[in-house]
Amino acid sequence: MTDSANPERGYVGDTPYARRFVRELSPAWLDFTALICGFAPPVHDGAFAWCELGCGHGVTPALLAATQPEARFVGIDLLAEHIDFARRLCRDAGIGNATFHAVDFGAAAALDLPQFDYIVAHGVLTWIDESAQADLARFIDRHLKPGGLVYLSYNALPGWAADMPLQHLLAELAGRAEGDSIARLAAADRIVAGMQEAGATVLREGAMGREWQALREQLPPTYFVHEFLPPGWRPRYVTEVRRQMAEIDLAPIGSATLRENVDAFTLDKPARALLASTADPDLRELMRDFFLAKRFRRDVFARPPRPLQDAEARERIAAERFTLANAPAAEGTDESPPTSQHPAARAILDLLASGSATPARLTAGGFTLEDIVAQLIFLAAAGCIWPAGPEVDPARIDRFNAAVRSRVGGPAEIAFIAQPAGTAIEFAPEQLRAMQQGRMR
Image (cartoon, rainbow, N blue to C red; front, top):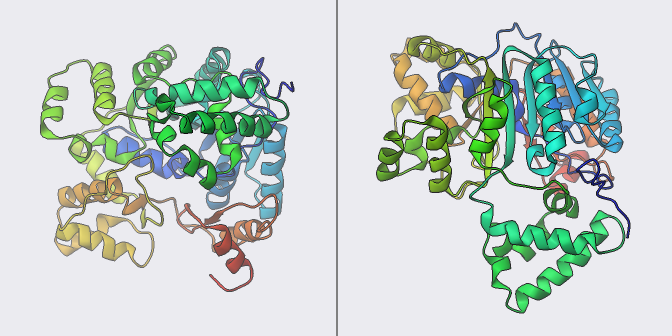
């Protein structure tokens, strides 16, 4: 048997991860999260420092670096293949303000790196063992600038509980198969499919298990390798993560899944009343996860958190830039987004129809700051608008997208096209090919 999972490092090492842009990792998105939760984001003039732990192929830091040339972006990942890809992408796109390091989190903590305004880690807490988790926490402790923000996302309990038997069986079966991780996953999957057909109903009780074969056809095998086969795989309760981060003096301030910062968007009145009667904020958050059967969390922490007065928070929110959303925002949720008939909401959407803008100017049209901010939060939580970065030199966007188009149809294909607002649109393969051939813009 080939030991391709590298258990001594607690992670899958023979199969690259999917190449993705994660919008919630952007400084604009994290700043907006802090503001709507009543906290001050990092203080900087655009020359901030940002780091992703477990950056994969580096698509997110590369795209953000292309759109924010005064900032410094750093990506850290265990797999040299990922880091090589990220460096080539930046070279081809003419990006000089992003650097990448092929090291584990323990070695990364000892690198000569700056203090970061933002440190982000998307999903990796689920997939690494306790030793690597401790290394991640030490890195944050050493390199987070005072007043900085930390984003940690992870598979959550109780939502994942029903799929844990499926994951355990897949990992056990794959561990006894031959070949690389993709071959071992395929061997395990054949047995799992047979067991599901033969009546092993426990393998169909979770959200993944119910749609297992359809998901296997829709998503690439690399997704399942990294989602299910890491030796350190374990979903987490929010209270576990908060206790771990409290050891390095991080305090939770909100969720980068914007709708989850307003209980009225996600919970009915009896649930809200019960939560309101619970004094302990960590217990209250755990109870909320049980109401929502939460499967994936996007937690934002600060050290130290800096509360804002309501009036200042409103002024700063309205002065932020926003753009119309160009993809579904309710990832991981089944609810349809709410709609608003408020005149301020329509005015915001009309303003953004011609490009990203700061809605504070709508006060000149008779709207109060309170109404503007309330509708900004509503529209963002509903997935209608996104926080946007600063205005970008179109030449930088064009060069990044030229590097993306040059990869269409090959093994290094990237499905995301950068947008002027510092975001990206994901395209299907046939759309990318049409774009490359000049049939679509």
